[in-house]
Each structure stands twice: as structure tokens, then as C-alpha cells.
Length: 428
Ligand code: HGY
Ligand code: MN
Ligand code: MN
Ligand code: MN
Image 1: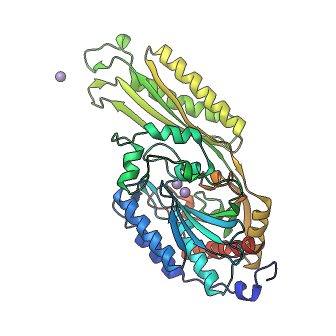
Image 2: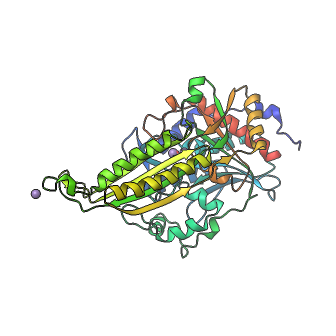
Image 3: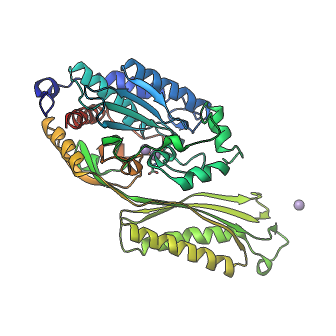
């Protein structure tokens, strides 16, 4: 077989966009919030039902399906040199509360559709092709982002941490996983790890989750790097008390300490000197949460990112200093300051980028090299394999909200570029 996929069969890739759209719409019905929003949290009944749906589609695509102990799902199409490192592709299907139906899903259903497209075109893979549905990319349930791909890439600290990690209802990771039929044998997670070189290349198809491609009218984004994410949990404790009777000078209000820290975060991010530094307070819980009771506890969760790791780490350091200073000034206790993750950025691999560029050109699709400001499972797969990401435009860049939308034409373009890229990497 030649070193390039036989072009005549692949240049006329045809895919059934309607069936892909139907699958996206059907998968969205496995949700704990009303349409058009989607809420699908790790190891819940809706997650388990959605997993069954994906495994069924993998089976229909002729993939052999396996799951690891935490529920990463692998669908494999054996190549004619199955002993070679496979080419991987995939994404996630978990969805944060009240979000949309395309984030992650496009890279799982689209990958399965890419397999169907290649089979229809009569393509024969040299390296096996493997579709991966990562068990949970969103941090929703346990506060840990990219749980499945992080463990695949190897993280002793995370393996240990999971032994006493609980969700907001005080359900342990192990019990939650067991309720979904995973983590059967004595919580041993070491089997999840995949050594570097397991895949000769890994490509993830994803909506951009930003406005650039749509605004510039460019159908394909080729990711060169994924920004460095960090998340921090902070807890303040004060005396609390009666909102009417306790005079202001006698108060140490944990809620106001949290509010001041949120504004301090914004200041530290804005003074970083770069538009690429971002910071968000997405969770701010007060206790006892009564309008006439001074908060005695405040729980703040911070997400801060930058494409430059040093700048991002400076913000993390300043947040810590501010938390200590605010606690002292307001005479509250800084009862917790936990850096949940502080990950380096990831660079896409030159060879994979070239395969995506060549595929876009062959399909006469204009493309833009760009950075991903959102993190993805590819951030960790870059530690297991040469990595690449394909972006398609999404409506006004909306994501993590029900208005998230990608047009069928863009879905089709993304799947075709993915299919051709996988074919090139498979015969390389
Ligand atoms: O938050 C992120 O960047 C990803 O979309 N979960
Ligand atoms: Mn997301
Ligand atoms: Mn995603
Ligand atoms: Mn009263």
C-alpha cells in the first residue's frame, strides 16, 4: 500500500450529516435539565445512558469496544498492521449544568462518523484507528477537569487524591464510579495509564468555543497550542451572626472576604499585561445562606488561564497573597487554600498539524492556525502522543450555555477533515 491514502476514494468523502445531527439531538435528551439545555454529570444515570448510546454507535460502526476501570471508552478499528501504534481520536460527552449539546459531543460522534466515512470510501487503515470517549472532561462533580485523560496521561497525585475525593452530596469518587458499574476491583486505577507512544498521533475535533472562526468566515481551525489552566478552592471562616444586631465594627464577614477576593482576582488578571490572561469566579457559596445571617463561611472556586504559563503562575501566586491579606484585614480565618490543578500548556505536534493542513487543503477548506483558550482532553493526550485539534465554528462563539450551536455544514467539514487526517496518520 502506498504511503498516502488512495486519494480518488478519499477526495469524495460523503457523510450523512442528517444522521450525525440526529445523533447529536438524541444524545442531548440524556440530560438532567430541560431542553435546550444539557446537564450530564459524571456517573449519573443520564451519563450511564449516554455511555450506552455511544457504545452502541461504536458497535454499529464495526469498532471493537472496551472500557477501562474509570469508564474511558475505546472503540478500535484494527489496521492491517495492528502491531503498530494506533492513531487515536475522541473527546468527551459530559456536560456542565445548563450547557449545550455540541461541546465534546462533536468530537465523539464526529469521530465515529469519520470512521463510517472512511469505511464507506473503502479506506483500509494501516495503523489501527481508535475512538476514545474520555470519562469526564468537565470538573463538575469532583472539581477535577479532564479526569479520564489526566489519569490516562498518568497522575500519581490524582490517583491518591481520588481515594478521598467526595462530591457536593458527600458521595465518594469510588462509590459514584461503582454506582455506574466502574472501579470494580479494589479501587486500583493504575491500569488506566497509557505510556507515551501508545498512539502515533491523537486528533480531537471540537467546536471552537470562541467567536474567531465565525467572525472571520473561516471553516476550519487548526490548534497550535492549548492554554494553561489552573483552578483554586478557597475557604474563609468568620463568626457569622445576626444581620441586624451585630454592628459593622464587630463583624468578620466571610462573605465580604470572598467578594473582595473575587475582585482581587479580576485586578490581578487585568494587570498581567496581556489580553490572554483570564480569570473567573464560577462558584461562590455562602453559609448559612440566610438573608439575615452574616456569612460564617464562604467557599470560592477560581479558574485562571493563560497561554503563557509564567504569567498564569504569577496570577495564582497573587491570588494566594490576596487571600492571606484579605483574611488578616477582615479578621476571618483562611481555612482553606487548595490549588486543584495548575497545568502547563500543550503544544500541537508539527506532523499532526501538517496532516490537518494538507487535509483541509485537499478538501478546499480554508483554515486558521490558532490557540485554544479552552482546555480539552488533548491537553493531557499530548503527554501520551503527538497531538492535534481541529476546530469548527460555533454560533457567536457561544459555549457552556444552551445557545451553543454548530451548523450542519460546519459539522460535515470538521468530520471530513478529521477523517482525512486520520487516514493520513494511519498510513504514515
Ligand atoms: O473549561 C473548559 O475549558 C472546557 O471547555 N471544559
Ligand atoms: Mn466544556
Ligand atoms: Mn469540551
Ligand atoms: Mn430572628
